[in-house]
Structure formats: C-alpha cells, structure tokens
Amino acid sequence: MSIRRATIVPFAVVWALGHAAAAHAADCAQTSVGITPLNDLGTGQYLGLYQGGLYPNGSNAMPPAHAAIGLTRAAQIRPLDPAGNPDPSGRYVLLSIGMSNTTQEFCGTADGQNCPSYSFVGQATADPRVNHSTLEIIDGAAGGQTAGTWDDPTDTNYDRVRDTRLAPAGLTEAQVQAVWVKVANAAPTDSLPDPNADAFTLLSQLGDILRTLQTRYPNVKLVFLSSRIYAGYASTSLNPEPFAFESGLACKWTVEAQIRQMAGGGIDPLASDLNLNTVAPWVAWGPYLWADGLTPRSDGLIWQCTDFNTDGTHPSVSGRQKVGTLLLQFFSSSPHTTPWFLRPGADSIGDMNCDDRLDNFDIDPFVLALTRPAEYEAQFPDCPRRNGDINGDGQLNNFDIDPFVRLLTQGN
Image 1: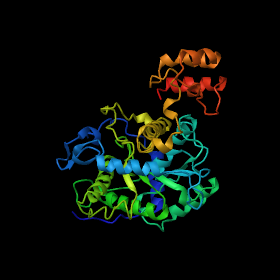
Image 2: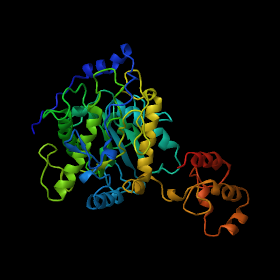
Image 3: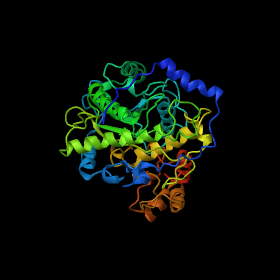
Image 4: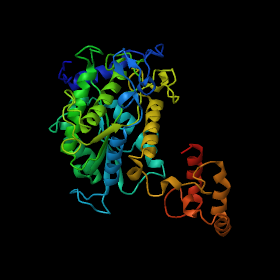
C-alpha cells in the first residue's frame, strides 16, 4: 500500500468549489448510491476488501480494554484554571475542529458565537441536562479548512482558534480536554481501492491531527471522530460520493490503528504512532453520520435532498439540525461523555416518580410537586422534588413548566 501525502488545496480554490453551487442545483434524483453504511455492513466488506463495523472485527461495540481506558480518561476531565491547574471554579472545553460542514453543524455562524437554536451548540445550550457551569463548548471549525490545515502544530488554524475562539471566552489551550473532529479533503480524485485513494491520505492526516492535538492541547483526554454525511446529491466536485462514505473508513482505520497498537499489534504505517500514553489522546467514534440517501439505516437515519443546500454537499438548516441532534444524543448518552458533559444528577431530571424513565407518568407527579409540595413528598417520599428543577436554577416553580414539556415531548 503506497501513500500520497495530501495536496493542500489553496483556500481560494476550496472557496470557489464550495460556491460553484450557485450555478448548479443539487442532484436530487440520486437518492441512493447503493452503499451499505459501516454500522450496518458489519463483517461484510466494502468492495469485497474493506470490512465494515465501526470497530475491529466488524463490530459496532468498542473493545472492552479501549473502552475502559476511555472511561478512565473521561473521569479525569475536571475544571482547570487558565494555566491548566485543577481549580473547582475553573472550566474545561469541548472543542470542534474541521471544515465548513463541521462548523455549520456544530454552531452555524462565521464567528463561532451566538449559535442558532438548531445547531449542536444551540441545542446543548437549551438542554437543562447539560453542564452549563464548568463546561464550555467552543466551535473551532471554519469554512475551507480542510484536513491538511489541521495536521501540524504550526498550522495557523490553531493560532486562530486560540486567538479568536478561546481567548475571547477567557479560555486557554490548556483547558481544552475533549475534541470533536470532522475533516475531509477538497476535490478528491482517487477512490478505493486505488493505492493513492483519498481515504488512505485522510488516515495519515488523522494520525497527524491526533498528535497535533496532543501538542497544542496538553490536557486533552478524549477525541471523537465523525465522518461526512451523504454526498449523493452533490452537484460539484468538492467532495462527492464515494469519498464522503470512504471518509468513514479513514475514521474507522484511525481508531483501529490505536486499538491495535495499544494491544501490542505494532504501529500502523499510515496513521503512524498513536500511543495514547505518550503522543496522542484516546480516540474513538463520535456519531457516525453517513447514511445512503433515502435508504433507511438500521436506526432509521436518512438524508433527504432538502437536508442540503443547492450544492448537495453543505447541510441546510434541517441537515444541520439533524447532525446537531445526533451530536447531542451522543454526548448525552455515551459513558465516555456523560460524566463531564451532563450536570450532576442530570439523569434524574424530570423523573418525578423515580421509575428511571421520563414519560407521561411523570406529568401528574410534576404538577403535584409544583402545586402541592407537601402532598408530593408524602406520596413520593423517596423521590426528591429537585428532579423537577428542569431549568437548573435551584427552584421548582412555574419557570420549569415549559422546559419540562419540552423535555418530555423531545423524548430526552
């Protein structure tokens, strides 16, 4: 297997490709490309050569040894002062890095601030379960910033993130402890199984990115990778299929490279050294975002043409909201994220009858706790009224009604 070092496409070219959509409508007829998503492919093989599954051996389950290390790292995330010292009144950062799709889905604004409600940051900001006291969610991604602009500690992207995203929020690189990475290359030309395929180049770049993150963010503990969304509707050569799908293989191979190396299997020749005790943070999958257009994935995920802008590549508002929701579901449920992403006791929020579920059976107890506290405490002596403090202001009152309804109807 040979490797081609990535050609860094000038930003002007990336911009031109991305904006060529003004003259091209999305190809809404290509509702499928006939590829099975990795999480459904299992032990099957893409092109008869590359095994599916998100993790080794065609499995979607993380190997126990790797999962255990991740749990340890998650438990180590704690508030730090700007110098990186433990400080109960300090903060820690979940950072995104990547390209235009990444920032559109994570936040959706050019400056990474005032993120709209449909974005991941917007949804997380409105979610009462999320830790809004010591966790800071910062969007470091930006349009046109392809994988080759993130793979070296001297890349100007990291100075930009430090100076324009972290510093204005009173944060430093020493406080970054978790990172979501979604990267790709512009105008790829070689697909698998070509030995110069972009998926191999991206694997090498992801290895470089992980080592770079360890260098720039010395306290980083966890990194989560996501591949691109469906690109069958693409009307430009910016990053069409099968490259969007194959970016998922690059993510899979990166994670597997670290797992194999730490199990004594040697260093991957393309990803290079990913020792999580010395040169790289622990890495695993974030949400897997690719699905074959209108063909439902096993979990029901589909991508409609209306989920994209006119280039068929960048997500529309509905597409950004879809990814934002998937991100929120992941960070709110993974055992590697809930200890630091959710506020203490968040798993009990809204559960007013303490049956470990949030459903319609909590409505009457919520009303009772709100209107007749003594009667509630007598009827539910082992279920604290504070579970009804949905907005997290320390009180159960009328301001919790709308958040309770929203939490209930959204199925969170």
